[in-house]
Image 1 (tube, rainbow, N blue to C red):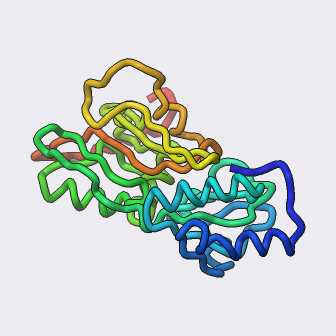
Image 2: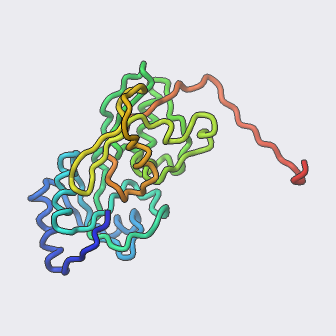
Image 3: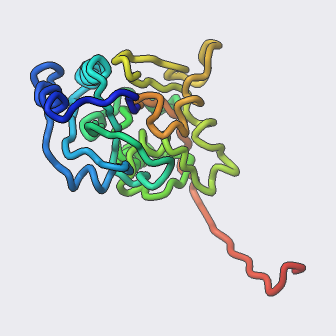
Length: 235
């Protein structure tokens, strides 16, 4: 979500300093956090942390009005994916957007905020004998939103589908500070533009993913892995 215009440093610092009062987001100076989570020509040194989606949209609306470049970040496990940001004035962390919104286990669906970690999501599902259909990289630290933004799947996608097949609904905040939704919280939804597919693999360039609804699967009673080795390509 980069902006084309640039602001002089004194003016930029003034606008950044007003973020807590204007948007309600907490802001912390943490150059190390930004360096380990962002891939930018010159990573920012401060991080805005919205407590909810209202604060996030207020932040994006404010930064959009003043030409401030915002780079969304989760756990930073996918920071080497995608291109390098040419400009990054401030990072926005989704660490507090990690709630389970709705989990009707009998319907085999779950709706969560995008800042939840894959690990926490798996633990929530496992308590009901259910699972995510994918084995994603860096699952112990990765957030759901970051994994979707990078479209990183796993080997089970060959049998159970990729993220694009298992996301049934998605909400995101645009750079204008507006919330938009696609799909729904149930498997059968009305026809319309398939916004989730547009956001999956977008690397945070189209907006900040805020909420996701997923299909989930029962944990199978038994699993097995097989490995075959061959001495030559002909074999």
